[in-house]
Length: 270
Ligand SMILES: N[C@H](CCC[C@H](N)C(=O)O)C(=O)O
Image 1 (cartoon, rainbow, N blue to C red):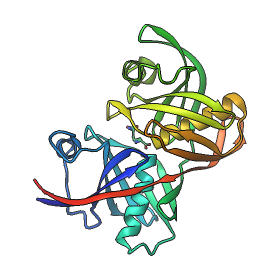
Image 2 (cartoon, rainbow, N blue to C red):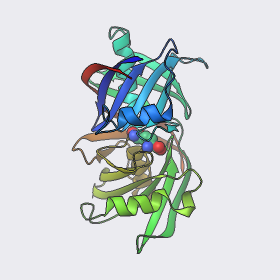
Image 3 (cartoon, rainbow, N blue to C red):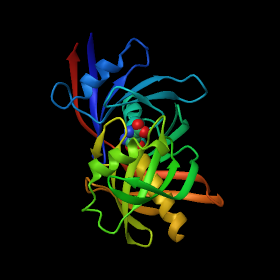
């Protein structure tokens, strides 16, 4: 089997992109993990497939983590997915709606920047006190398409992200599905910096879109910071998270605005 792919990058979170509109590709989790392997494959944090719509969208987005497991949603991946399907239509689209396991997502294009309208966040909780890695952390959580734990710290650079991240990712409080783990610090009101340990990558990534949204919403919850919140990620990009608080701890019109770049095109024969 020969796969023609694009490698794309959303603020440092990187992906293999496949056009499977004819549903001819049937890839096992093992093959996806091999494609994402940084030593034995192309190398990526995840893989996205374009599939035909089933529920009224323009397309269906399938997202798989680097370990080959399917996840409900990927914020950086959704921006790349939007640009990828636009490229498949000779960049003739201005807006695209796509189905995900987390609900309908839409993307609008501004050059190489993309604004996505996220699914409604849910399950927001504040202030759980959890033992992690020999420390006791104050942990907030919210599902922004996938589950996220959020810990605000003073010294972001000093956080043992792999140790604390894995500790939260596998913590009993977040089982059976586990969670992504984010560590954030306030740079200024409405401006935060974050680092993320991603479920299914099982390591820190240079950016996590759903994690940025989770941290921005928690920042608003804790400080009242207005929309949009600027989020500086490990890879050095700053993205914007917009939202409307429609009731206490309830949000609509949640958007994520940032880059989605084509890196290279290729083909692999398996
Ligand atoms: N690793 C996440 C999915 C990808 C999230 C991240 N890459 C993003 O940009 O939102 C999970 O399994 O919940």
